[in-house]
Image 1 (cartoon, helix red, strand yellow):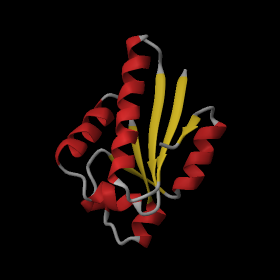
Image 2 (cartoon, one colour):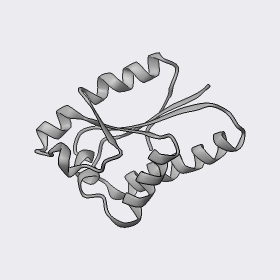
Image 3 (tube, helix red, strand yellow):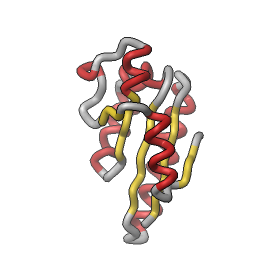
Length: 116
């Protein structure tokens, strides 16, 4: 099983776009081999504001990747700290209690940590 945890924590659209591109290429590579996979994007800190404001191509790509098996997880603590309501996030987002704890759990379960 191929496992990877992508982490975005800065409010930088270029980095977020790079993360989505990395995820797209990873999905293409592993699914093209017929290999089972678990890919997770964990969003923490001020990056939650980017997710809240997703639109256009970035929003479409995020939804497409989620439809192809990406788990798109956002930190509840970041949501509280930056005043982001669940309703303001794309439907593909899953809220986790603490993003950093989630990253540790994913790594303990064998996921590679990737921070674009």
